[in-house]
Length: 347
Image 1 (cartoon, rainbow, N blue to C red):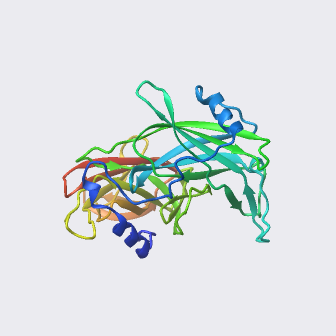
Image 2 (cartoon, rainbow, N blue to C red):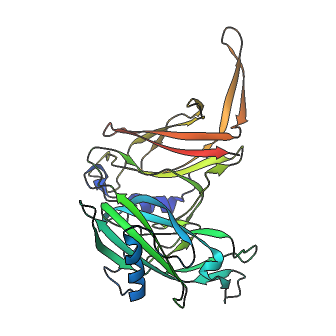
Image 3 (tube, rainbow, N blue to C red):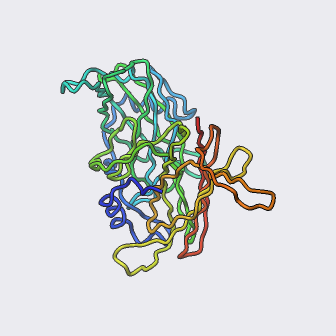
């Protein structure tokens, strides 16, 4: 099985900046995004637009867009890094040919974020507001103003229940639209493993960290790691399935060591729609809580005689169909266990 695509230098950076508190309550991990200022000026018309639709989570949209996913990752100095995904039509974001002459299309639009924290009675208290940088590019070849693309941004936040109001506006502020999403960031329990959502990956690259909250097109950032996820969870026959996730709450083999080392073992299985395994791999060992693993989707089919003697073994790509990858995780330091899974389709 081929090695992870994360470079040695990038992986070493993750290990060095991981904190030994992984095994303790209130796990803290690597810092991901520069935090926005605690408060920033928001135009009155934007604030009014947010408030108008807040109760019903249905606000005015001069052009349609939607928040459709929140991915929760670890973050240093706070419990979690929520990454928010939204989709919008190219033409509504105002793409124009880049002035650099690169042949790319570029859009510079206004974006405003306001977070509300939910109290026990269901009330909403203003928590944080800021304006992320919203300058994005897309290849000029094949550009279609009617096509819809997806975008992401993330920032470190403490545990709790929140509502995000995201406003997108034209450069002249004549067109504005708002979308809302409710989300929860868990407070991690002591002596328990918590695997994050399993992400199917198209590509991973080491990049410069954001110095402020930026909106990214077609990818998301975790620190210096740029991830292009497979949003459709579809793969072709014969291709490998590359996954990325984090296992939080794992014990440290030697708490006095300057380099925190975990001892994780993960057993992977692919199940068909009937719940039966169709591919099994030998358990994989990891000494870090970041898991990036390519898995070849190849079945080993055996032919046996009447006595059960194996006559031949044939390897074939996993056929077209819908499947679930099950990840059974064991922390060999603490003895705790957890499962993670992700659905995908071969077509």
